[in-house]
Amino acid sequence: LQPKKMFEIKPEYFDAYEAVAAGVFKEKGVKLTYEIKENMKDIVEQKVLITDSSSWYVPELELEVEAGTAHFVPIKKLIDQVRENTKRYCGEFELEKDFEAIAEGKKAFTFIIEDPLGNAFILTDENDKSNKLTIEHQKRTPQQENEYGIQSKYNAKTGKEGEKALLEFIKKSNKIVLLTGAGCSTESNIPSYRGNIKEFPESIWTTFDPTICTIDNIVNSSDIRSKYWELETHFMAYRDKAKPNDAHHFVRYLQESNKLLKLVTQNIDDLYDDAGILSENQIKIHGTMSSVSCLTCKEKVKGGIHECLRRYKEKGDVRCETCKGIVKPDTIAFGQALKADDLAEAFDSLDKADLFIVMGTSLAVAPINKMANNALRANIPMVLINYGEHTYSHVADVFLNGKAGELSQRMLSLLKPF
Image 1 (tube, rainbow, N blue to C red):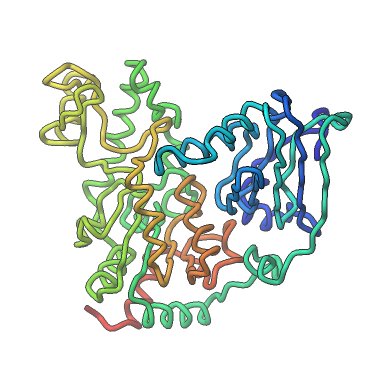
Image 2 (image 1 turned 135 degrees about the vertical axis):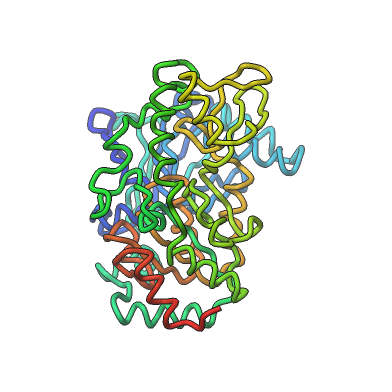
């Protein structure tokens, strides 16, 4: 319970693993039981913080939502979301009218939150006596301590021990899912967007203003659109000279060994295509730089990105030849939603996985970084390969600190070549 006057939300409270890494968790977990009376419309509009370690319940609706997705929303919105999803997938259902009555504050109900890290709370007035709130502090189970990496500051195997453990994981695994990021391409001489590594002390976002990649700005400002095409020109100057490195060849080895279930890459450079990774084996979660489409009529631009850069150099703007609409590469700009089918396929791949390898990414970009949370909850062995520690380093099974390409080359030398 936090009074309104004292309320200050901090982003790390949402993510269980960030909270643990930052030491932002309580000595005990918490169970909040909020007994809400009927005709309390204002109460259901109160916000609650459901962290991704929190589960919540409404007994009167036979509703139980397991930990997994963080929310900072009114109680009403939580219940409405479940009602809408249930109706979408199941059609009319028996308790739908009860859902509506409770979401509107017309019917009495009990709202319960349990968070083993103790960070969940209900934002309400400390002087509110009309509804009963019970706060119970609960000791975490050993399983919960282990799941969130609380027992030890650093559980992962590292160095030579970590390399040996990774080799053993690979040898006994047949359904490996990989999540990769910009760190897999920097050794192909492609600059990262956020990173600050030796080869590229200045990332793209220190050279260009990130706001030029906001979809609203691209659509509404010709000046910003011009800067956007300058950025793409800058990026493609590196991409046109780039070749796959051992971080890409490592994935090819897994594919040729029939061990690769799915590659989920945040990279837009298509170097995995050049390395021979089949399209059905990869999900380009942030899209691809090579193709370009009209935002209005959706028609693809013949000649792709290079044709668009040629037109930009000649005319200073690029338009669809069919409808004169604005065109952009088929990447995900800021403000654009990820493709729902790609996102669902990425997370669903973990249901069959027997090993999860995260390579060349600090897991800073949501929502795809939550694949790591799901892997941990499902007890799927997780290996992190990254240049520098980050939030999940201490809760992985293996953490190899170094460049993705160099570490991949070492793994390939120890594995049977394909």
